[in-house]
Length: 196
Ligand code: ADP
Image (cartoon, rainbow, N blue to C red):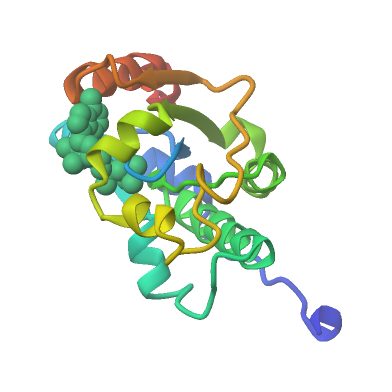
């Protein structure tokens, strides 16, 4: 398919866009179980960065699955395709000069590694939102765990599908941290990365 496609080089570069924004662009990738707090933390982190004039954009699992990835299921193959597209979209947004905050379960190590490779290791910062299954199930924000226990949802991460924990995340936050503490922990670790 890609045989007759030749990449065109555009004059305005990633570097120039970053300089124009006066900050670096990269991906902050939040991974963890459903209900662990990824979207909540992403939202609060974005608000803090935005208030400081940082150009940001959040890619959220549920939202992406309602749009660009609405043709995909939760089978292992489709989960991988979901992640592949997320990686490619994140790369475009990094090119556009944005700090991208992604909130995805991304349960497979190989898929997270793929995203890391797609955007480039230097542009990838992983956050493990390490909330226990018990706590996620207690919260059951979307009612999915109840449905999964009743067998109404198949391939539910943590129940009937695996979650492979990150081995060396840039930051790990847990249910012991408040949302504010989690944001502070992430912010303090990425602050250096923002500078050009
Ligand atoms: P995910 O995006 O990981 O599926 P959500 O952010 O949608 O998770 O839901 C997490 C829920 O847990 C939210 O309702 C949030 O208010 C609640 N919550 C309670 N304590 C915390 C905490 N310490 N950190 C993050 N979220 C928390």
